[in-house]
Image (cartoon, rainbow, N blue to C red; front, side, top):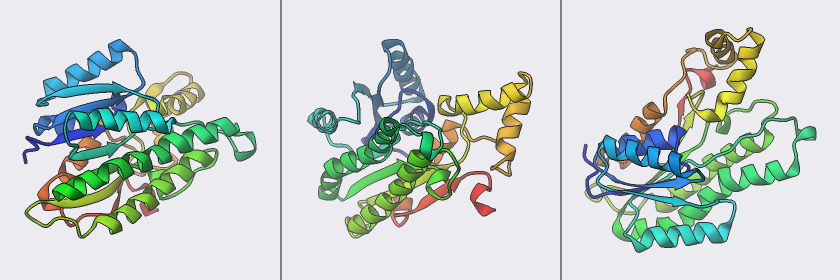
Length: 266
């Protein structure tokens, strides 16, 4: 499959799952728009990875998605350089604490970035996709959009919201386009444990319980939830995103796709 001529915006893509999605789309020839909050060295490293993967072109933008005005300005700048065919909402943060110990500002930040920013980019870009009869929105949800875990109230709430938002948007745009144009689809990918910096604090907590043995710490962490006891890689999540961008996937919309090693099968 070729994504030559397609332009993809991936939020939160200077590292982790977002970068895995970006490099996967780049390998199919797409032009890539990276986004996030990072230092110059991290941005340069991400740009090189995307170009090395085969991107037709790479652009990078830095903005804080908690700020609606900044998000609107970001999308305006992106659109000034051409249409966006593929939107991958991936930006996300995490903070673990019980409800009674969760700082209100952490709740606000997680909801703003992990849910509200998805709504903002979608409301700004979906009308343009509708006009062209082709568009793909791929929202990075989580297994925590399907089930819950203690001490993650804002994260679980946001991810459940992402799946609800995905379903509503899918219904609103389901009849746009046709098999030839590819239509406009909106889906969510729901990863379980993925090898990223976001979960490193949780890994380290388990490693500490096993006297510094990282392999045992990871196995302990996965054994609690993920029957496969294997983490996914960002590139594996990216491969799913690539398929969802194909014309063959024109009738897959409103789906929440678990990639969780059997977590939600229990």
